[in-house]
Figure 1 (cartoon, rainbow, N blue to C red):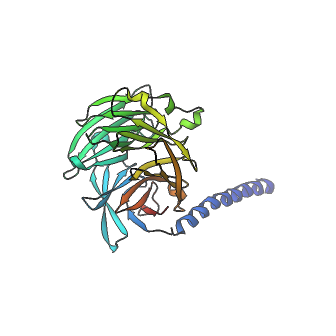
Figure 2: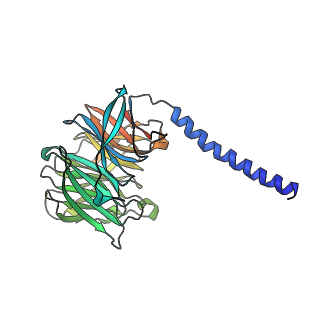
Figure 3: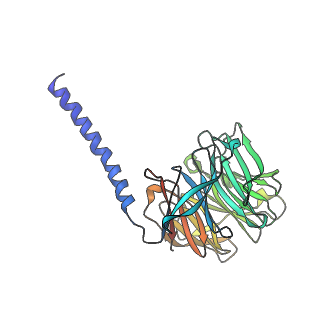
Length: 330
């Protein structure tokens, strides 16, 4: 081998090492940064945790497993600190192995948890599963889509006062309605759910919540559009309207959580936002912003514990797969 060839290869290798070191150094600097607000960390069995919700009656955080075949865990105290918790698995459903456990909602009136389940890689399977919150017995498993020509990905779920569940499809751009007994009864479709330009639909309908006045609010992640859907009666698909949001973009918004009937937290990266409405969500405005600084961990959901908002970050790091919940102060 000629000296010039060796020199050339060495230069390429050195350049590669330098370029590789830049993002690694950046990640290390981000990991060493300390958020300015309260942080709860927990050690996990997996690297990806899609959703975290505070269970007020059970006095615990519940988390969904995006990897490892899915499942639900709870965060329990450790001997180290009240802010360092340990993840304990509550349920792993063999019938759902190979799929991702995504957004979930606690149906307090019926003491159950409703969980959206999807095929993360192939987008060929979507389901809604319900578990008893005390025994973790499965109450029903409703297949929403399986090996269809149309791709789908059940991403999040909301529940109304009658126990009807509304499941967002992040790939197919629709909302499934499942009744209190687990029967798929309707699918909400609208041309508004498919905005122009293909890249705006890479991740479609995502976080979804039910308002006590009888309508849904759902976010379209890659466009940032926020929709209001009247589900009280009649042709639901014709009752989809675009909420006129001012004061900032909601692009890349993920999970939604009500702070009050007039305030919603939009969890997302690089920042989460507080959105308020004074006219029944015909219009709304962005009134607050918060970033934990942990942009590499990807914020995916929000939950409220005793009036304080906590943001779940999808990605865990380290040998113990450390995950964090960061308090958002707007």
